[in-house]
Length: 377
Image 1: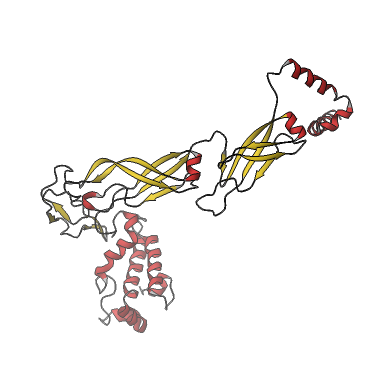
Image 2: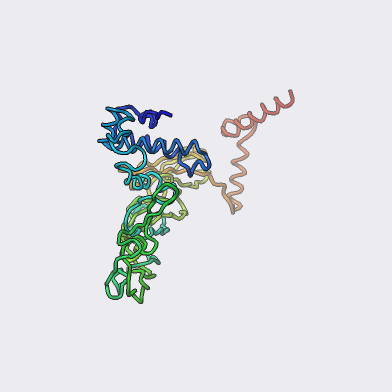
C-alpha cells in the first residue's frame, strides 16, 4: 500500500514553517493518540503516520531529500531511515513531553524543585481606611525558611547527588510507545539529597512560624482588590524560591455611605416643612460636612448630586460623586400644640382643590380610577 504524502498527512502546505509543522503535528497527534482512542487500530495507524511525517519534515536535511525524491528518498538509504529509528527519533520523547505532558501526567516541565505555595490573606478595612489608604501590620502563619540551616535542610551544609536521577532532577519512564519524564520522586526535582538532615526542620528547609509584615494599602482600594507581596508566601522546600502573598481587601459596611465604584450614596432625612418650604442643610462627606440646598416643594426620594465628593480609586485620576437621596420624615412625639397646628394645616386641604397640592397623590388616584373603570367595563 502506497504511503500518503507527508504534507497531506499533516494538512499543511509544502512551504509550511517549522512552527506550522509543529502545530499541525500537535493537532494530528492529539486527535489520534492511542490513550484517547483505546482499542482503535485505525487511530493508532493514523497516529504513527503523522508521527512519521513529522519526524521527516521537522528535520531540515530529511525534508530537503523528501521534497526532491519523495518517499523514495528513504527506501534505499538516500536520507536515513523513514519512520522509526532514523535521525531525529531520539528527540521524540522531548517533543511528546512538550505536547502531551499536561494531558497524560508526564512531560518535561521545568527542572528543579517547585517554588513555595502562595498564601491568601483577607484584610478587613473601614470605608475611611480603604478610601484614604494606610500602612497596616499583619501576622501570617506560614512556612518560613529555617534559620538553623539557612533553608538548605542540611545540618552540615553538604548535599549529595541524587542516585535516582543522577542529579538531573527528572526521571524518564515509558507509557506505551512514549517516553515521558517527571520530577524525581526521591529528591523532589532538586537533583540533590541530604545525608545529614537539619534537626530543627527535619531536612525540609522550612519551619512553621508566624511572620509579621507591614502592608501598604494604597488609597482608593475596593472590595475584592488584591495586593501582591512577591516572595512573602511560603518558603520553598530545601531552599527553593518562596511563593507570594496575596492580600485581599474586604470593606466593612458603613453606617452612612454605600459605595458603588467611585461613587458614594447616602440617605438624608428632612422634615416636611423643609421639603415644602425649602432649606439649606449640612450633609456629611468623607472630607467633612458641606451645604446642600433643598429647593421648595422637594419630593421624598429626590436625588442630589455633589460632584467630586466620592472616591478617587486606585484606577482613576478623578474622584467620583456623592449622591444624596432626601427622605421626607414623618414627625413623631408631637406636642399638643404641634398636633393642633397640623390639624389646622390639614383642614386647608378641602375638596378637589386639594389635589393640586399633592401631585403624586393625584397621579395615584387617577391611576386607581382608571384601573377600576377597566375592571368594571
